[in-house]
Length: 82
Image (cartoon, rainbow, N blue to C red; front, top):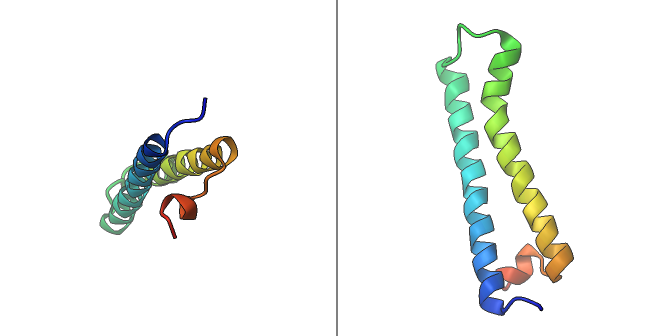
């Protein structure tokens, strides 16, 4: 049974909100880089700390958008009615 249009729109809104989370995580990573928040930590661990959140959130968002396109035949432009 295919979900209703309202359900698809709600799913799209939730996914866009998560995309905003990726933006926030990226901004926090930039702040960490410029303030030297992890100065006493080894370089490899510092890179994992700084890049871990933005990369993982972006990966989940891309996976969810792909799932939306494959299972429901909708892409982001179609959901935003553009």
